[in-house]
Image 1 (tube, rainbow, N blue to C red):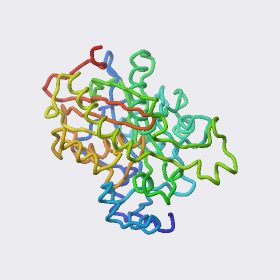
Image 2 (image 1 turned 45 degrees about the horizontal axis):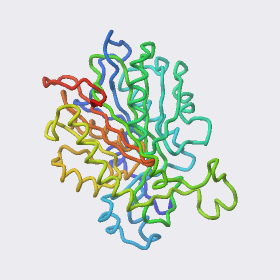
Image 3 (image 1 turned 60 degrees about the horizontal axis):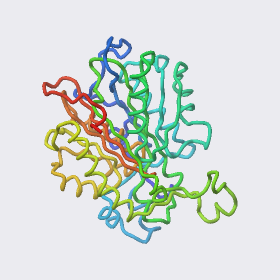
Image 4 (image 1 turned 30 degrees about the vertical axis):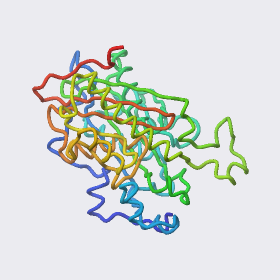
Length: 380
């Protein structure tokens, strides 16, 4: 695969590679993230993202799969995706994204008390990749952990970090990251999966500030009866690595594409309906939906049926594909850079992934005049 990939031009890198600092007048950030506001609830101070420089085009994948580049676009909506460089791992992407978010928030890594990394492609089976990120950042005052909810990993991690901060006022700042390097686990002869996925990382810094974007509502869920729809069959305690598991491709990512599509078509409307009903809102009240970028074509079809107009839906998968746990924070960061998140905006994050898992979070940006919902969980 790597022999047929292309490097992004300088112009493309400045547009698509969030490792390059991006100034946006609409980007929310704390005036001084190192000075918390007494009594303020924890919220998002800033975001960051990292996409590898290596661009993998549809043309570079199509020949080996026996399809055309147009075939890939017609079925997925993806035009290109990114792949980590040789020797570049999940922790490297996660570190870049976290550093950018910390810089934008004006927060020193030494002041961070918690790091949670949502990923299903850790550097190693153990220890936690978040500990490697902690070391890279120099966040010696933090405790760090990985969280695996596959593509819902970032939303799970955001909810967990938010609730930990609410329970422990000693934690001034938390870094929440979603990062995956799916290029390491894909079978590039499988057109059901290889055309969909890419590598990337996105991060947010949580802090207690009146300037922070509030986390007004969250809800998580899972259905373990469908645990086998998305999986890597070998490499764990049930099927340890062996010459046989390697020979039979047991360490590659596998997915029941039809079942997962049916799940997504059903679950995304449910997530939007539950969140809006719990918060007393309608689809029209949402300024932006940031969904997991499972399949761009599917997202456009389903959100249109739900009554969203194109300007209400953030799409990054056309250039980045499905970046797993990174897809929601990467898409949010890109939307902010593009000026699509304005003061007072209500932004709904919605994700679903292997397990099967799902989660939503309503983020309310400061500066608006409309009343904002304040509860996290819907009534029982």
